[in-house]
Every structure is written in structure tokens, then in C-alpha cells.
Amino acid sequence: MREISVSLLTDVVERLCIEANTKLPGDVKCAIEACRACEDGGIAQGVLDDIITNYNIADRENVPICQDTGLACVFLEIGQDVHFVDGDLSEAIHEGVRRGYTNGYLRKSVVKDPVRRGNTGDNTPAMIYTEIVPGEQVKVTVGPKGFGSENMSAIRMFKPSAGLQGIKDFIIETVENAGPNPCPPMVVGVGIGGTFDKAALLAKKAIMRPLDQPNPDPFYAELEKEMLEKVNALGIGPQGFGGKTTAIGLNIETMPTHIAGMPCAININCHVTRHKTEVL
Amino acid sequence: MEKHITLPLTEELARSLKAGDKVFLTGTIYTSRDAGHKRMCEALERGEKLPIDPTDAVIYYVGPTPAKPGQVIGSAGPTTAGRMDAYAPTMMSVGARGMIGKGYRLPEVVEAMKKYSGVFFGAIGGCGALLAKCIKSAELIAYEDLGAEALRKLYVEDMPLVVIIDCEGNDLYKLGRAAYLENRP
Image (cartoon, rainbow over the protein chains, first blue to last red):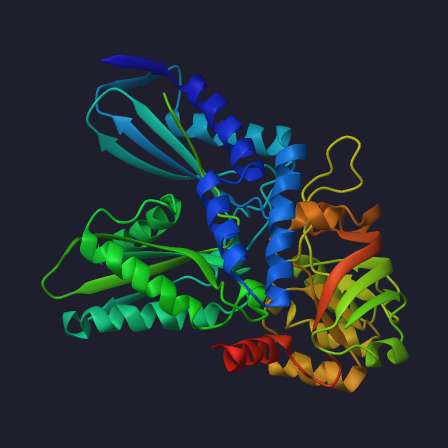
């Protein structure tokens, strides 16, 4: 058994909140730059040029890429042989978010009640997702999630008879409905299977997966490719002004489900698809 | 067409702008988003004066990040305009003419734009670090308790924008996409 002080987790979360918000992952930059090279319309090219200039400024000056520095989604893969000591694990994570968003000059975008509102003032609480895995390591990923894109996400409980075509139509319908709102070019995360809630979690995990790593199952890898092409054939384009690049990536995650169902969730992200991981 | 414009956004100036125009905007603008708009519209309902003079004003839908030491303002890109649709016609009815944001607007907002000669400008979403560069001064005006959503007065120079919906109701989201799909090989 390995003992880990929760204060270590606070430090890591603080650092990851700041890094994730100021440094765009390499795979996302590559995808944007590849799309810029293929785009031939003047307006679309101009938008992608500005997006590239923007993340370079953020990188150089250590400032947030986007002013919506998001709801802090914190994913923990905890080795089953780890024992956390010196305090409350969740509180340690919230403290890391509190420090990261304060010391990193990030925006505080969390309200304490969904209906009665009221800003909490420090961007807490974090959204914490935990998973117990074998081993004695802890993998921490911080993915700040902006809500212009989160608001355009959707979930549907399909009958199995809807089949693959039902899923394909739902992806297109959701992207079409999102249009310019989620700041395209977007990243589309698709979660299929599990229960109502697990499908949504899979979709969120899909947008956290690097864009240069296709689904390991060739059937779904092929489907990712096909659907990315279909989404880009819609012509919504960068910022919705028309063009080839509506999405820079489309990832699919799946899991087994019930004989009576086929849940499908689609989580939409913008071109500022942020995530940063550290292993303790 | 590329145009350099200086505020205030008079009716004449608004009428000269067409959907698809690339605009570099210079002048004083105000920031407000969900909570600020709600307060302003509630104040108007009670017959109170607004903390800003809405005449020919341009409102930027933005909630910036806090300024780091030495910065005028933090990252400051546009937020989704549709959330202000419930308030935009009221704001235009008292004289506010320009809106800067991103995303779809409801037909009733477009109707109000036609009636009051309003213009909806798009700034590039997700480019907050770049857009902050053209903000030369920022001053807190009201609703400080709203944090990022407080009302601020900004002076901007050559802020890069695109006219998304003009005062005749032409919409770049429809026109741009149709033009792309038509010309696609």
C-alpha cells in the first residue's frame, strides 16, 4: 500500500488548472493547423488564423486561451493500493481548484445553486469523477469545460431497432442544431451504451481523448472517420461563417448496455479543447 | 468589405453596415451578459435609469478573466448571444444599437434590429487572449457584486469584428454557409 498526502493532490490540481487553461494540447493544435491548410475560403482561413494567433499569445504570455475558463472537471484514476492521508480527498481537490483559479487569474464561473444562482467566487466546487483501477498510482486529469459548447450537448435513449443509422442521424442533428453557438470548429464526443448517466460520462471522456488517437476498435475508428467527414460536409465552418472545418475531431467511446436499449450522448466542445494530465 | 468604424453607432452608421462586412471598431463600448442584462431590464421595468447611457451604445457580451498585474483586462472573447435574446429587444427600445457576441439570435431579436436599426457583430469565440489586445482601457461601472458579469466600460481600438446580422435582417450564418455549399466542387 502507498500513502499519498492529499495536499500533494491540491498542488497538482492547482498547477493543472492553470496549465490547461493557458496551453492548448499539441494534438488539438495539430488538428487546427491541418484544417487551416485545407481550408480555401477567405473568411474561414481568417478565422482559423486568428484562432492560431490566439493560442500562441496565450502560450507565450501565460494568459487564458478563452475567457470561459470553465467548470473544472477533475478526473481521478486511483490505484486500489493507494491510501490518501492528511485530510479529505474531495476538499483537497476543491482547494486546488480554488488556488488555481485565484492564483492563475482565471474566471470564476460557478454558481452555488442551479436555479437560485449566486457565484461561489472561487470556481468551486470542481466536478469530480473517480475511478478505481489496479495499482498504486493516481492519474489526475483536469479538463476545464466551457459552457457555450456544453449547452449544445444532447442525450437520447434509442430503441435498439434505431441501429447505427439512428446514431449517425443523431450526431448530425446535434451538430446542425449547435451551429455557430459552440464556437466551431468543434470537437464532438460521442458516448454509446451503458445507462443514461454512463453514456453521458463516455461522451465527456471522448472529448478528453487526444484527437490523434482513434478508437482501438476498427469498427468505431472507421465510424469516427466517416462521421467527422459527414459533420464537415454540413458547411457550418469556422465560427459558423461557412467552410470546410465544422469539427476538428470526433471521438466515440462505447460500453456494453441492456438488451432493450442503446443510449447515446453527444458532448460538444469548442476548438479550445483543454485537458492536462499528471500521474502521481 | 473591410471597414474601419468609430463609435457612436449612429443610425446612419448602422445602416451602412452589411452582413459579412469585416469591421475594425474603435470607441467606447460596454460589457454585459446574463445577470447584468437581467438587472438592467428589471431597472427599466421599475422606471429607473440605467447605469449607462444606452443611446447609440454597443454592448459586448463578455465576462472577462481577471486582469493580471500590468494588464488592462484579462482574456475577453464573446459569449453566446442567444442567452441575451430575452433582453435584447428591451435594450434596443431604449437606444442601444450594437451587440457583440456569437451564435444564433431569435427571430424576435432580428425583428427588433430591423425596427431600431440594430447591428449584431460577431467576435471570434475562443479568441479571448487576442481580443484583449485591442482593449485599451477598462473601467468598472456598476454591479460589481456580479464579478465577471459586472458592467464595464471599455475603450477599444480596431477591434476585429464581422457583421453577422445587419439592420435589414441579413444573416451571415445563413449567407456564408449557403455560399460555401453552393461553390463547393
